[in-house]
Length: 427
Image 1 (cartoon, rainbow, N blue to C red):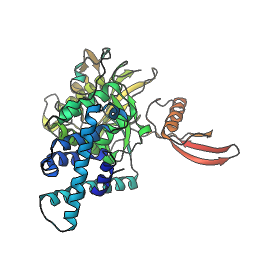
Image 2 (tube, rainbow, N blue to C red):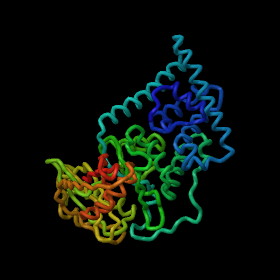
Image 3 (tube, one colour):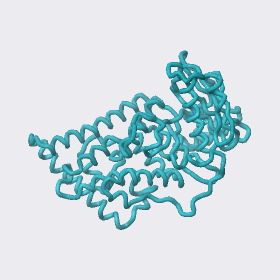
Image 4 (cartoon, rainbow, N blue to C red):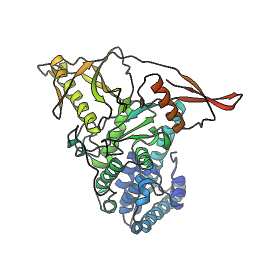
């Protein structure tokens, strides 16, 4: 739930809570960028520390690992910001016009706009099921088909960077690395809240985290729902990455930044397309698919589209409009990467795909939307995301759909002779 005004923010801070909205891109940039004015004579490092705490939380996930020596400093930072809000609020109501009251109005405007956006998005109730790759450029330098050993020492958050001026990017990279290597539903959900803000639609128990290696990288490939399409979600990732690490905000494949891949993927068994688009696919293999392979094949798609013709004429390049994942851990089912383009990819470009010594073929795929409705009556089933996902997975196998196609079944309460039953509709 977003915070719509600074009075509510002050109440949270006075209650020793740092809300996650302070780690969203715009509020974080505002707070750190105006730290000297907001915290005046006190330490401007308060702003950076509060943003770092907002990103990991305090009572769950990575928040449980906050060093004891930092607790007093964090509480002092909360007191300082709450005091500034209370004092400046009085000045605003008294009609004072100075740099502090102007910042107060701007800060509250940011919070209100996010709260209004969240309300608008929830009212629309239009969601997309997406996934993203949490790995860094360094993570994807490994061979896509090789086994990766777990690190002997678990990664932890670099709290020293939280107190080092200008080192907030180091802190955020350590958070990403810790979540990537160790997983953890609470840690992953908090980070997704920081990245997507009001666009995140999933509840904590509805975020599913896939591993990137057979025995490592437990938080590599999360899947979740957002209140927007994949293009808007990708923009959100790029902007958030840019706020914390700089680089090119418009480049979804830039090697700099927090994430190596700043593009999200649609989750789909079959892919729809417009009349102007073509759909291409790559078979990634059966059973387990490493995140490094997904990343490298995505890059190959991008290169093939850019060099669609043999003469590499830019005017003949195909524009990538959407990338979708259909990943299945069942050894009997093929996992695929789909790519929608405006413009064709030539035979030469589509046939020369090699990833770490193994060849792959890009082929044109018919795009269709297959809808299968399955109705199941289950007595006393709980109406929550876990129950829906588990039942959906079982039924998907019965109708030969991928077992982890990330289906979104809906449960409807029905009265019956055996008590409360639920009717599940499986798209």
